[in-house]
Image 1 (cartoon, rainbow, N blue to C red):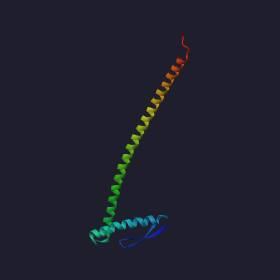
Image 2 (spheres, one colour; image 1 turned 180 degrees about the horizontal axis):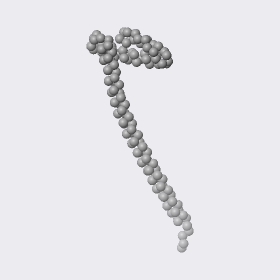
Image 3 (tube, rainbow, N blue to C red; image 1 turned 90 degrees about the horizontal axis):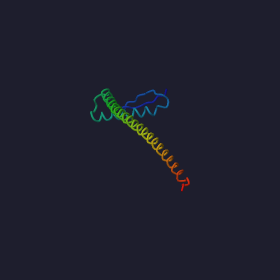
Image 4 (cartoon, helix red, strand yellow; image 1 turned 90 degrees about the vertical axis):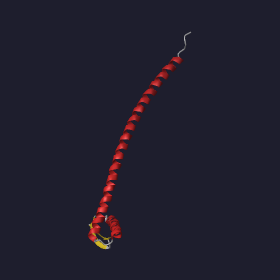
Length: 122
């Protein structure tokens, strides 16, 4: 296990993480520290534990909003897939109908060409 030291609200915390995840953990800690700093600017010194809890709630609120957006987008993707599948099915039916019509037209043209090619009696 790798270990990194992160700083949140001016305090250093030594943390363990999987190998290769050090930069990711540092980035997460820096992002969380920005929440704490924002709250500290807004409310002043209200206690480390309270600031941490409030920052955690802000992060969870943001997560909940993102989850709602993802659900909405998943619904839109489902609708788009259904619309695409219906359009493809309709296009296949149209292709089949067109192919059938062109085949019938070709047969009629061949029959007409044969009649025109026959010597006329007279």
